[in-house]
Image (cartoon, rainbow, N blue to C red):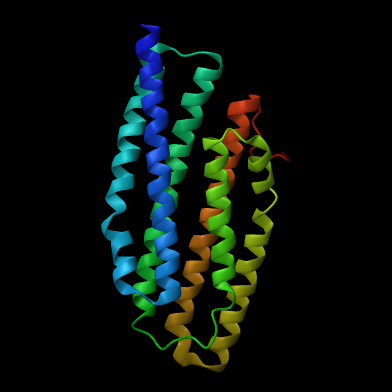
Length: 218
């Protein structure tokens, strides 16, 4: 019985890893598609979004079945809970990657903005946060997870500066209004991805230290 449980727990962990890799790829392609103004690349993000959705369904079903039927305890219980939390966060990250892809398609139909207001720097930091947070789970690295929790304010500042810059541009050059609004929404999606990456980092700390750090200093 225990052997069967461990096999299913291993399957659950493998599924969340595959899901995380798929979401990472979606975020990377969405950012690359925006940077390169590549319509086919961002369309592939939209077309493949169902892959992450299916992982979410499968992980949710298996995780809750393990909780209901196997009654795991101690570190096994924390692992199942952690994976179920990550499952929701990763699915939402993939949703925001899809949003970025859709906004980019709209931007391709608009006049090119005279500046990107450092959104690519924001995107790079956001992607780094997600990659590091997910890697901290993969490598059982709570030190890396805690570092992620210190970076969120940087992303928030990027968003604040970008939106202020866009508002100033639109005031003087209204022809960029639609493009500017879409860029502002991309900044908001990036901020949410960073927030969700922080959630994953907090989940890693919870798993290894049995300590809840959400809404608290790590």
